[in-house]
Image (cartoon, rainbow, N blue to C red):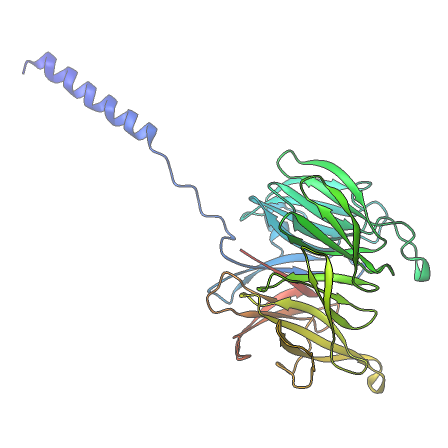
Length: 368
């Protein structure tokens, strides 16, 4: 090989090396919040200090106020709910100040802000559910009064397109619109405003399907079980109501226990066969202090006795991690409205796993 050929060969090798280096695709840095549980911390009423914490699935070390950490600003209100839809997180924030309610859209896994929706589109947001690709349904009370006149207007479902970051429409529903459950291509909507009908919405058309389902006054859908039945809780009669979501027929009503105790934080286990719930009451002999225990029942039970507690403890929220083979139950503890609470994890048997510090007033969990 001549000296000139050697030179050309060396140049060619160098160019190929540069091209290969330029074409190399670097692995994306891991997101800080990949696999684990988000804790929705409502915060102190009126103090605008609600937040969201994160616990990696196989650790007991929390990361607190992750929205503030990612964006350099607080959520600025009471955090009502959180879910993820097609790579985007949806945070509902309620604020006592007029016109300050909002919905924050963030990037899943990093919590970096993508968009914010505010009044007049968002008024008293309550719950959010997946309603199709890049589509979120958010139940809202609209503007409210006080006392007996709290629910002065019908509620509505705010429909958001998360891809285009736009409001699609508002679907009018009953007063005090509250919990929602998606079954196939229908969303069942409950309320707390004194109505007795579950509203049904077709998610393809975003239209109300008439008539609704008479489940009882202040009934709210809870979950869709392994038997393909929809369950709702009617607070006016203290009953769990089992519904055939196809025929829209109420199949059975089961009274929950006896006496003055009220169920809350009702949640279904990972295989959708067992419900957990907190049964609580305000003890007049102890200055009205809230007390209670945690119970469970099977979707095939014909009665809900609530005689023997599953866990002898009061919780402010319950949920089961569907992505963990251990089937752990997450339970939220709120010592007071002014101090950080805890997330306690239990085995399905009720055996304690660990306790993890959260922020003020933990109430709900979201798993990814």
